[in-house]
Image 1 (cartoon, rainbow, N blue to C red):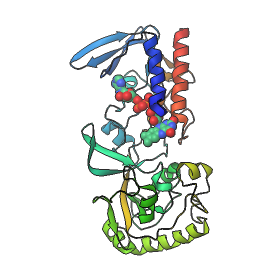
Image 2 (cartoon, helix red, strand yellow):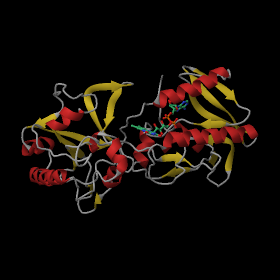
Image 3 (tube, rainbow, N blue to C red):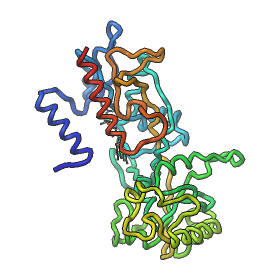
Image 4 (tube, rainbow, N blue to C red):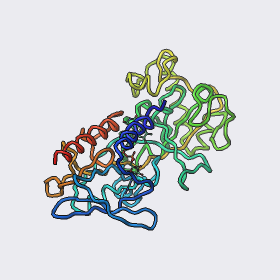
Length: 350
Ligand SMILES: Cc1cc2nc3c(=O)[nH]c(=O)nc-3n(C[C@H](O)[C@H](O)[C@H](O)COP(=O)(O)OP(=O)(O)OC[C@H]3O[C@@H](n4cnc5c(N)ncnc54)[C@H](O)[C@@H]3O)c2cc1C
């Protein structure tokens, strides 16, 4: 039995196969065919071959976000960040395809912000394999996120809160105060939770920066040592009391179960950093896929002049969030399914 995304796609794929609907692997849609004021098909490329695929009802763009389109992402991302967890094919084609025929584009902050690190030598698709920490790792007890001053800056157990706070800009120093940042944790954290592919009990790999003292770790990371020492002393008091007086970490039920340890008392997201060695992981923000096509309630792509483009639909990460700014965890796949369904229904009705 398959679950999560593979289970979902498996179910859809079996429906496609049962209906003998043709599908093409390793095939890139390069442009849209517009005839008589309506999108009537696509030009696709498979290897060296380019060919036309004509449609009777409409074209639904579900090509994902823009993050692997470095030029587009660099221009639209607040941090000029271009690194991402996503594969190279997710490179903003919906924006280019619809943009060429007047499709309206929306750029809105999502705040869901992966913080990335790379294990030296790890690659996928010939590019570095980035790993993210803000979905789980930064909310477990015995860890904190700090900036270069050694200060905590957010409730680390809520990825979107971290994302919002990363955007704090210090005008006098002319830089984002919390970029870069560092996940700092102790041996207890590693023993209990591991880190990414490092399982609890595994040998600590050489690439992980560590030191027996907090000051020593700060020096290795380039972080203010006095600041980090004070931060950890203060955080450890919060952990003991089970109450984070600075950022309320552990007060959000979603974070308790998703990025916390429910067996950890008194607070699933708070635990002291007091078991050397101490570890530090430098992190940088991922590219944000916040440049998307404007669609209406039927998933039709809107033209810059305000009307729907006949025969063109978009859903999933290709289309702007139907709920505006921010990110509603779990609503991404639900939204993609719902608007894909609405697009098909509208197209079928002619
Ligand atoms: C770490 C992480 C955790 C997440 N957790 C959740 C969660 O818990 N719940 C949730 O709902 N969402 C979650 N999401 C978000 C969710 O994964 C995405 O919103 C979703 O995968 C977007 O689906 P999509 O089909 O729009 O785009 P994608 O999954 O990116 O698929 C786009 C596809 O289009 C193909 N493509 C691109 N260009 C072309 C072209 N020109 N021609 C043909 N094909 C093309 C690409 O190869 C790709 O296969 C998470 C995302 C990440 C990164």
